Image (cartoon, rainbow, N blue to C red; front, side, top):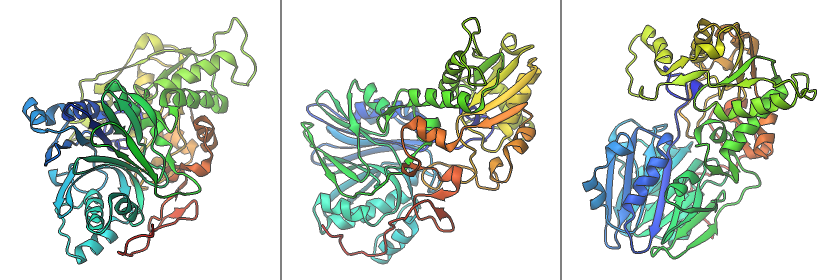
Length: 499
């Protein structure tokens, strides 16, 4: 994630993106296709759409980007006014097409399509239970586990009870967009770890991982789906019903959605991501100000942080005193230019070529940095290799000092809930102090944002955030890991849950 892109494998990968629509008097395929484009940043491994025309289910799933996965004929074949879509970056399951989504299954009680953003921590246990009951699996992904469990419950229960039964069996993070025949539903895990929102569009309703997808459809955001809530869209696009199926005392919102993953123009858990990042940048100045000549972002994810940092620097000095009227503070400048035509498929077989990846994607503007003290703002440091190369790059362009400010706390533990993050052995902050990391990357100074500052910028308490990757304590029951709360994990019990 360093440098907001793929500069040599030194970043967590995106989660996945889900969308569901129910429309009156028009086909769902094209709006789903456009919404997936809006969510492309959340996954580039595969893309898929499942629709239902009232009689049968239609599906098209392919590896690759949205624009490559669908042709005009594919969209034409996806008939029906209801459907779901998915973009995937794999965090559980293999890379082959069998784990691409939406996952489809037909059974006695109809047809199911399921799109999943997140990661279960008890998927193996539930899979073994279902396999012992005769369920045959075609993939090693946890999405198929959810689909089979829900299909089993639908044989005995109505839709709402079946979903509740499944929610009481699976454990981990998930936002789901589901089709049951021509009914579209959305489910968010009881701790709200993964985002999901509800919107109104012309002639219907939409569920999506981010509100930017609703904007793309000229829709209006209604609200976030609540943790533990089921939203059922009417098949004719005229309305929706909601059911609060599971309630918890606290949430576990993923703070990294705001730091990096979500689009800046999305509203997640009632907060505009862009404004949160600007507040995080202001907090960086408050906690670790340095009077450099220039502050510049690592594109693209560092931009809003750097903007907030520069604004705060214009108001107060590094000592916290009001800035004099004739003192402009720290200049904000775009000192690193990004080559947007070097994609994720760039092949880097040797170490020399991997190091060259940063230079292929980023080029410093020498006049911005030459002879100056420079503060670089980035969203995070993972392995540290990219930060080292960035500091070298700016020094070689003539900077006299290079300071590094990070808009998140040190990442010292892996994520088990939907982010493909490095292992502890690969995380530079897992066993190194900030001073040791500063020395490793070659910066004149290095500061991270505190956990309390993140919580304040989000307007949430630490108890309502998932902070596992920066504390090593998790909100779900992960084998071999500590928890940060009393965890209500399910036990193996195939009988239906109480109503």
